[in-house]
Length: 364
Image (cartoon, rainbow, N blue to C red):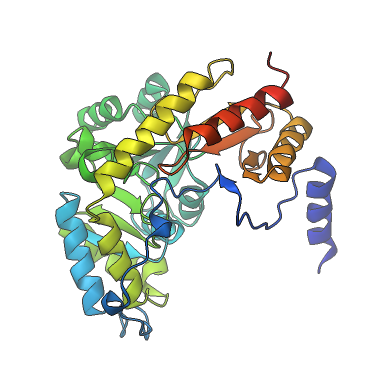
C-alpha cells in the first residue's frame, strides 16, 4: 500500500476514529435500521424465485418481477413512476450525477447524506450547502443563484434524527420555481399512512420532483427506488450510470421489496414503534436530545471522542449494541451515541439502556 494511504490510516488511529467491522449477533439491538423488525420475516419458499439476474437492466436483467415491483411501488407511493436501484447509495449517486446539468445549481442541506454529496461531486452542476433546516439561509442561497435550481433534503436526517420543515421548504421551492428532491430513506415505513413517508403524510407528492426511498431500513429488504414522473424515469434509464452499468438485483430481491412494502402487519408494527419511541423520550428527559420526539433515531450528543468511545464500549461489553458516531461521519465536536429504536425493543430493554446511560455519563 502506498505510504500516503498509510499516513491517512495512521491519522485515523491517532485520532481514535478508526472504523472497524464488528458483529452484534445476540446483542440487544439499539443500533440497526431495522425499525419494524422486518429483517426477521422470512418469505415462504414457494414464493421465492432464486434464479440470478443474468445482467444489467438494459441487457437481460429486467425480470418480470422488476417490472411488477416498480408498477406496484408507483401505485403504492402515489407516484407516476418508480425506478429501482440496487441500493440507496446507487440511487443517489445515479440521480445527482446525471440530472443536474452544467449551469444548474444544487442547494443541499449541510447535513445531507454522503451518497448525495458523492453524486454531486460527479455532476457538472454547481452545488452549495445551506445551514441545516435554516429557511432564511435557503432563501438567501436561492436568491443568489442563477440557472435551473434544485434543492435536496432528507425528510428525517440519518445521524441526528431530526425532521426537515418539509412543508415550508416545498412552499419556498414552489414560489421560486425550484425543483425539490427529498430523500425519505428513514421516513418510509415509519411515518405516514401505511408507511408512505412524510412527503405523502403532508400531501406534497405533487410539489416534489423526486423522492428516494430505500428498502434496507424499515422494510428489511435491499435496494432503493426513485419515485418520479415517467419522463424523468426514462431519462434516468438512459443517463444514470449507476443504474445502467451494474448487474440488476435478482428476482427474489424484487419479490421481497414488494412483499415488505405491502405487508399487512406494517401498521401494527408502526404503532408499536411509536409507543417505544414515546416511552424512551419520557425516560430520557435528564439528557439533552435534539432529535425529533417522533423519530426512531435519537442522538445523545457527547462532544468528545474518547468519552463517546468509552461509553459505547461499556454498552457493547454488556451485550447492548449501540454505535458511537464521530468524525468524519459528523463534524468534530458533535460526537455522540446514535440510538435506534425498534418495534421489537421492550420497555425493560429501554429501562436498562437509560440506567447504563446514567451510570456512564454521570447523570444523577
